[in-house]
Length: 60
Image (cartoon, rainbow, N blue to C red):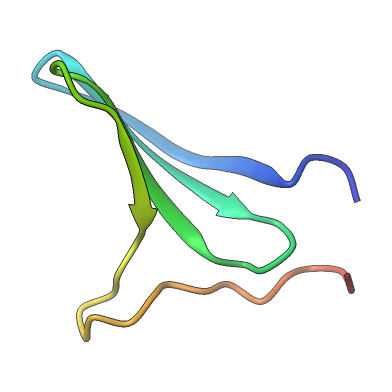
């Protein structure tokens, strides 16, 4: 299938970077931060507090 994680978007904010990456196996979106002295990765939530999941394009 290729790379497991793909970059969906990237934004520079106040000396740091926020990225949205998608797990190609599960379809789960993650928000990653770096800079500003901190780094982290957590599932991205929608307006209802549910994890954002995009159906994988090809079977596992």
